[in-house]
Amino acid sequence: MLKSEIRILPDFFDRYINLVEDIDVVEGLKKFSPEVIFSDQLVLKALGDKVYAPGKWTITEILQHCIDTERIMGYRALRFARNDKTQLPGFDEELFAANAEAADRTFDDLLAEYTRLRQSTIDLFTSFTDEMLQRRGATYVSEIDVLSLGFVIIGHAIHHNKIIIDRYYSLLD
Image 1 (spheres, one colour):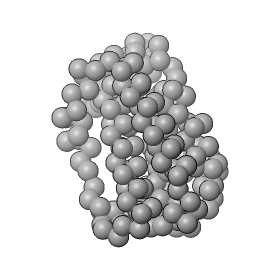
Image 2 (cartoon, rainbow, N blue to C red):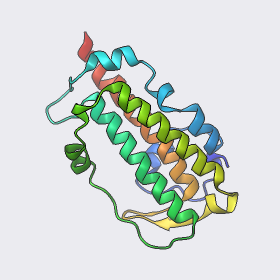
Image 3 (cartoon, rainbow, N blue to C red):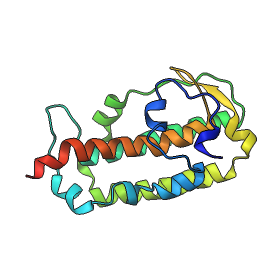
Image 4 (cartoon, helix red, strand yellow):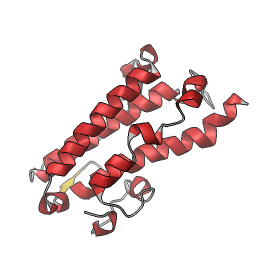
């Protein structure tokens, strides 16, 4: 299903969905793969542990955050596709980042994991029927349908890549 087939744009998550073109969700997951979104690997590796301000995440912490978020959104999509009406809690991204120990991992290791995860996400969304993609569930901030969660996954990574380009690239000058 296409992004334009989202019936109700969910509050909060719309900021990510709006970053994605009108494309089929599975095609979008393939087109905007981790290797494509984070393709400037030489620059990203050169940034190393640099941050643009105190308390901001390093490149490896950003990758770990994207991995964690995709897993959580995929889990939500699975629950809602299966018609689970349980309101699902949010997650504290700062707590996750503080406890992920991303600094102990390499960029290559994280990108490889992210790539494997994306294939699993593609497999999951490929298994959903149109009816399942339209099913809705409740999160801590709003109701959201499965189709929207797919576009949140895509747009969230695009969002973080834009931050890297806008705020981190200048650290290499």
